[in-house]
Image 1 (cartoon, rainbow, N blue to C red):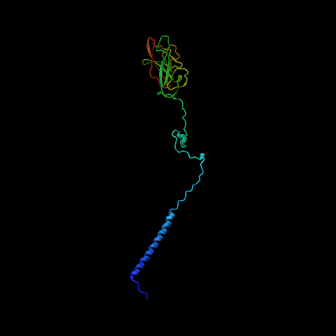
Image 2 (image 1 turned 90 degrees about the vertical axis):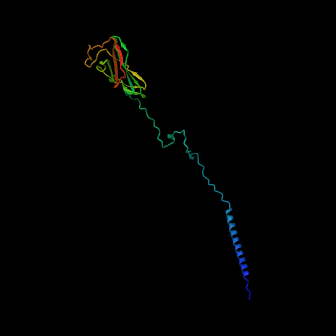
Image 3 (image 1 turned 90 degrees about the horizontal axis):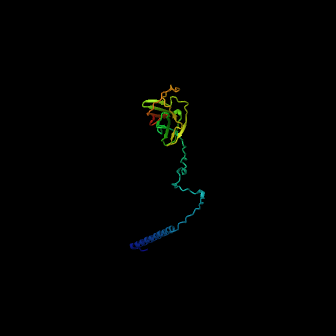
Length: 225
């Protein structure tokens, strides 16, 4: 019969067995750690280089930076092409642009002289203008005080038209003056030969004119001797 071992022996055996288990676990942990360390120490694979075709000069990408000196209409396809505004040419003359002046060839006339009357037109506007300066649009009136002595339209014959362009800032004057015969006019005495003559002796008369409905700014005074 085998003698029964003491409790101290069993205790020592358990301690030894526990130590063996601990050593085995430690070895297993060390082995696993070694595998993990080897896997992480492997060098990373070298990157692969992909070959791409070199673009030809015609396929180069344009620089998106705009040229500050370039014409926007030439670089922006959405911009409308510039259009040139044709010159509309001279415009019709208006009283605001044209100054009308009555003109006489002298300030004083001797007893045998007949006054020659003209119209001066000055374009004070900024553009050339056109108007009818023919005799059909002209009117000459001579007065003495409030008495109207003569009108060019009372006995006018064969009135004519003449369209002319007056340059901006230019002045034009009648090329053929109208002559006053120093008599009183009326539509009833155009054929008469004994019309009343205007007094002389230093008498003062005034000439006013109009053309195309534009009145002269100031009357032109003259004397009959």
